[in-house]
Image (cartoon, rainbow, N blue to C red):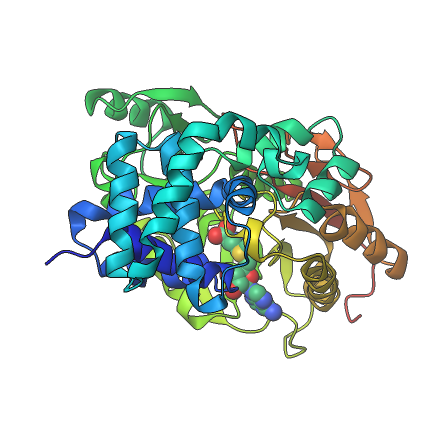
Length: 434
Ligand SMILES: C[S@@+](CC[C@H](N)C(=O)[O-])C[C@H]1O[C@@H](n2cnc3c(N)ncnc32)[C@H](O)[C@@H]1O
């Protein structure tokens, strides 16, 4: 017998509210469902997480007593039920009745009246309950992060929060080693996959589709990559004058989107990552795209290396993912202000450890998918202050907001993710043994 989708979604959401990462648990939960249930499951999980603080604010007004920790699945069921009433395709009466029935699958029949009562009250009093939300809840953001975004990006705050609640567009990067951009666009037309927008390296589709539908995807003709992320490899490659065979280290490479793009542009790439498991994705992408990339599992902070070996380093650091919330909506639940401090320290450590591996005359491109200054300009500013053999370069081709030390792409509903780029150079004549 097939499982109850809403109950399965409530169980996974309860795990996430307890601090578990969505990426780690999602596949396992989805695999337990029938294939034809998975799209709806995905919509419930991703949709309700993108709106979580909003419907948590409604829930707060409907349920006066805090729920016991062991009943956080009922809290999650209610929040996803509220989300479904506003955003789902199921008729309201049917989604209320399905949510009420899901308490059986959760073995909590006592909650039947509570779920029924709350959802029906929202149907009657929704407008008033929405009006009573505070401004962070209305934006569907945790208060600390909403305040930070308002302080750091006052003019873009609305755009940023709006983007976080939307499904991301699907963009493709075309593998020029296999096919030209124009030819691939023609193949998409023949396959009746409409393109919304063309970029310098790829296209954005009118509507997302399965990779199986993309022409010659498995022969390596294209990759799925957000448009903002498509600026990384060409920016570093431009700085290195497009020389064929330049040696580039991608120090935090998995799953390999940017490393493969660098190889497609002709660089000789070493892809490193601390996670052996995640590196398997780099291997799969490299092989599918028919590229040559050396893959190494290492902690990029480790001191064991052979000196200044690289013309270029791409440092796409682990970060808060506050620029890609629509793709990682659990960020709204699990991130804390302390995380930003910790990421910032790790980012500084990575930058400092990798700098000696760059040849004099070489360039390092620092990238985050964060929109917070603490992980972006603050990290670069501190590195510039502490390092003698470094200069800051401009990144004129990347279309974003110029900051003190780089460029910030603002996430927006119709466009790309929120990435930060900063380009550093080691002047020629610097002591390579440093
Ligand atoms: C933002 S992701 C990189 C995305 C990748 N550049 C791409 O475009 O597909 C950051 C990566 O850093 C890796 N990482 C974290 N700490 C690391 C360390 N100390 N040394 C090397 N890699 C690390 C993580 O495993 C993760 O794969």
